[in-house]
Amino acid sequence: MSTNVVKSPPGSTPPKHEVHTGTANPLRAIAGNLRTSGIYIAFVVVVLLFAVLTDGLSLSPGNITNIVLQYSYVLVLAIGMVMVIIAGHIDLSVGSVVALTGAVSAQLVIGSGQPWWVGILAAIAVGLAIGAWQGFWVAFVGIPAFIVTLAGMLLFRGLTYYVLDNVSLSPFPAEYGRVATGFLNGLFGGYGYDAFTLFIGAFAVVGYAAQQIRTRRARIRYEQVVDAMPLFVARIAIVALVVMAFAWQLAHSRGLPIVLIILAVLILVYSVVTKSSVFGRQVYAIGGNLSAAQLSGVNVRRVNFWLFVNMGFLAAIAGIIFSSRSNGAQPGAGTGFELDAIAAVFIGGAAVTGGIGTVTGAMVGGLLVGVISNGMQLLNVDQSLQSVIKGLVLLLAVAFDVWNKRRGGVR
Image 1 (cartoon, rainbow, N blue to C red):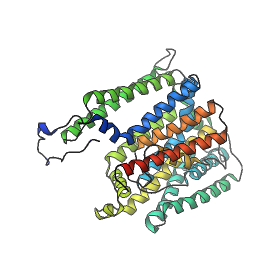
Image 2: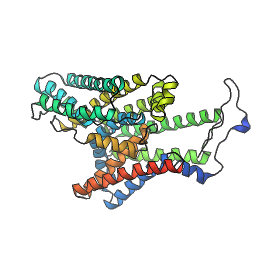
Image 3: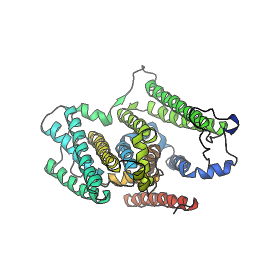
Image 4: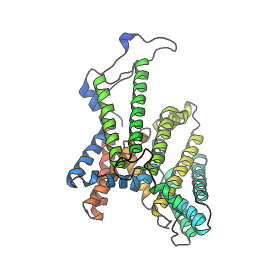
């Protein structure tokens, strides 16, 4: 595993002979990075497996588009859940919050005839209020998040039944429905495929490559070990190939889903927050060592409070997306969503003890669960067996986390 070299004093120029551009033992580097690379390898293997089993149907343009539409709200929840879990907490209420925010939006837009955007703003306001409510009990009263959110799961589900008066409401106006089912296509003219989607895919690849190059230069500047240049170039090339293949399939279906744009913006924003902001570093510090974080001056109560406010906000976004896709609100909406989000986070490499996890890993974990579920549906696997398989995948992911820690000498 790559190791850091002691950083030079501010203002000094690192001696050139101390900058490392590779590792002495490539096999050890691969083994040391198994925690972060294993999920990506598993994802590729699962995608290829279902492509073979379904005779390529799982990789068809229409099916890939459906996966994006069907699991987008789970991925939104996973973004907030990974931050909660990194800090050493859990949130069991997000499924009920999805249902309640969707119900409030439906009651205003469908039941009271308000404009579609009023429903969206109301849903977000409710999500923020719920996050503040739960954050207060966790951060300032000191009740464990497991208990607070378990109570919230029951409380907000009951409020959903009350708001909807135990009946479903539908349909939403077309503008509201476009949030989860709309597409951007034809902006660059017609070529038999959507050129705009390919342009966005290429733009994403260029942005990723630029970010990786900037990170590599920064690591060299601070005398940290980096991958050898061939490996570095190969990783960027593989990511570019996957992204462009994905964009190509979308371009040959219905174009770029609006919900994918929303999801991409959230991923970019929260990746920056977790990696480059003071708040993000404090979240990792709290989950890694609470006592050390307190001694170093981290305002643990404030961080925990805003963590749950943020989770409420993202649950509201997920509620808007789900109600938009469902074209209505149902009292039982969101059932089990919290389990899907938690599974995505742990499968994506987060540690059960906190302090470890990434937004990108949670996204790959969520997509892995989505590909497995979608593949089993295409193969007409019995619903009971699908639950068994997904449960085993989650168990193995957590078992790998425990094994990896013991191998590294962490108890």
